[in-house]
Length: 186
Image 1 (cartoon, rainbow, N blue to C red):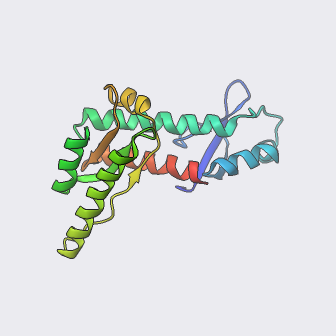
Image 2 (cartoon, helix red, strand yellow):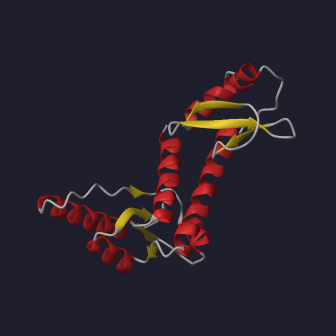
């Protein structure tokens, strides 16, 4: 189910994304991807699958991206409340060097040099840990939100670099981030 996204009919008779697949009623599953949702709208797949004349917004793919982004920002906010996210280049670099990072987040509008420095630190730590036989997994680097969106999610201003550190809330945020990344890429 990680590679699919569910859509349901709202009380208004419109097809809407059910990003958590928890809404009641009959749903339609589509491949998790912007292009797949766009194609499903074009081919009237929702009406055919539901065997009903339902409203399908022309911008359903964009609405789905927005909803997935909202779920990510909510998860990032929860990670912050749980103390499982650090912000700022210096703190992020220290978290990388401690081995506690489960994901590196960079704002889409970050400067190239700052991005390269932290990604370089992450790669360097990962290589050193693997050479030492520590069994470290690759830590994903994700660029999904701009600095304003990251700031809003974390209740801070001008967030460019952030790192999710080990914990359940951070893992939940990472799953949301990876889901959004898959949606955008496909």
